[in-house]
Length: 370
Image (cartoon, rainbow, N blue to C red; front, side):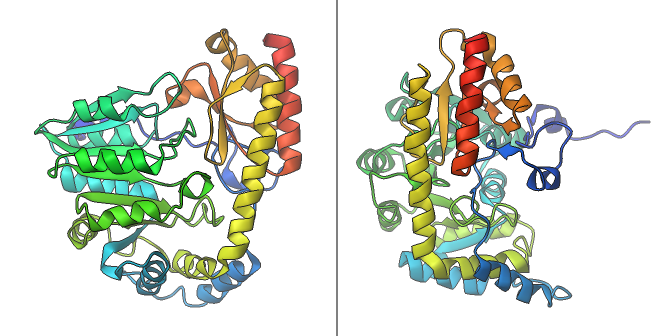
């Protein structure tokens, strides 16, 4: 008799990391590969953050604070909300899977745009819920009206990724506020804001104000992108105390380790320097997209720390070849077909030198295959 696994396993798509085939994350960190595939920060953690991690490491014989009390208080102070509205987890993915477990079941529905974050399809697959993917508009932005039209009495979750991954496009706050106000109260709205600090249109604090009027709203943010802590996995949710309790009930205890908590607490003390790093990445965004345009290629209006680049009319045909040329030059990017957008590339911004290497290699690739 063979072991019988849960039937849901066959439908869960899983997650493919951006590390090149045959390499580990440690290999990439110690090489001259330009790792432009995972939307990480090109900046190492601040020295003070490394010092805080080192100090915390001496107490690794003890379990971490299961409530992340210090971190939640610092976040509450920063965002001017109550600590009881903040939950901390092992990255945003931890919250998404917890939301699926807490809210979805066979017969329930989840609505999200597509292409968008590749973790969303896992939520329906692992619970037996019905997923409804709403295509993006031609300009690669969310079609909020079409998403509203798909909401029914069975809808439990609707997700808006803003700025969107992988397209980098941003929905202005006024449109988000209008959308949230029109979603029925029985539906949980997850506003995934992993890249919110990179957009230049609105104050990131505006969406937090919506929590006061909409108890069915959940905001997700992360320390992975702007605070250079992708390797420690710290995400947080801002929501009603009821949602915090639901998330905490289905997640494992001690989900955020002590090193991650110490690093995040210290990182919050250096907002001015973090903001300068964000501004430098925005400057690189302008420079990279100008360089891409000089090659005759188009991008979306990215408001994230990566570009979504169309390879043109022959994009689907040449995508593999272009990625191969980039790889031979030591540059790792994400293929669009793996993210729901065949014929496109998603390219994170690295250091200025890495971005120059990327533009030069892309020029070579387009000469060969464009």
